[in-house]
Length: 437
Image (cartoon, rainbow, N blue to C red; front, top):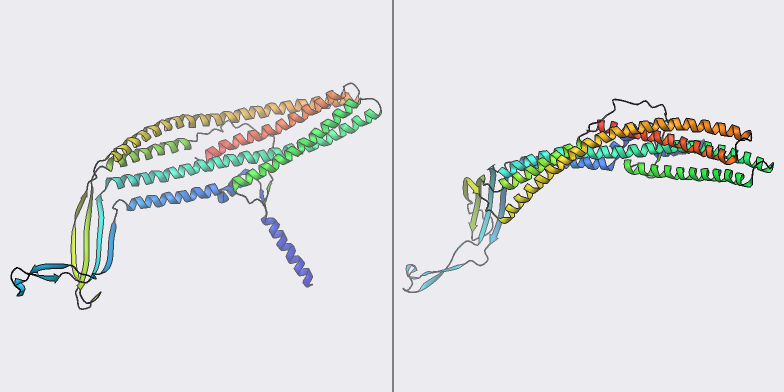
């Protein structure tokens, strides 16, 4: 009984481990959701957003630039300075001097010196730059997410297509094996030549090699998908979406994603603020300054209880005027040039962004046209193969023409599968651009 319980527990644990090392994705959206929760690229972007927010908080605090310098010191004047005074006031002879030790041996100091800026033009530009940088970080993270999802979509539909191509090749490999057997039987009967048998064998070997190559490519795509989604290497991936060849054309499927242009415009704003900051850095800063300090002097000991602490205070305004220099002049000129460059790049990005959107729409139309054409070609090639097979069985058609018809049918069927994957990918790219913007 005890052994049965142990065995049952082990099976439960083993089943749990297996379930932990496999992930099933029913749709591409479920894959996107996993990537959004686990992708290092997206997690890095979240940390960048957090960093930008803290920079904004720092800039807000920097508007008044409140700072306070405080210090506490204990000084032991081991050897005090000596000053010479005329001896006559002390009862000495005229013309002589008396050595007098000046100062206190033990000195304690405590002081506080707060400062608050009430007019600081540079800090205003820093706050605005921090706000713009926060917006830019958000937009750039959306761009990273969009590009990541597009790459995931490409890998996903490549896997779907490769799985379909493997299934097609396996079925045609069975047909090729049948053709080889038929050819062998006809060869033994003296109906066909050795060359015809060799062609049938070569056709079968080529299909086997193609199947091997497709299986290797499938594994490569799985590894690529793991890298994109940050899925552990030892975790098995299963994509269970069925291939649906009945794909209608969506006339309303278009996109106008402007993330790249938004990013370029925010970069222009940052460049403007940098130029403004360099110009305002030449203006004065006005601050409220104060001081509050205590000092104790004693010749007996540190922190002498018999000696009072002497307090001193002041408050006032401080005007800080920067002195013009060549470095500031150079930085201002460089910032102006960078602003012009960013404006030119923004204009180019706008054009590029618009053309990219048009290209996505055209790619979808092109993919659908190719998909419909490959479907028609496949149906015709399949019909040609069936007629060639019938003619071959009736000894009307030669074996090499039969194999050519077989290869044509296989290639057209694979092309049809690839065209479907391309159609689904181009459609997915538009949907991604419409959802992440």
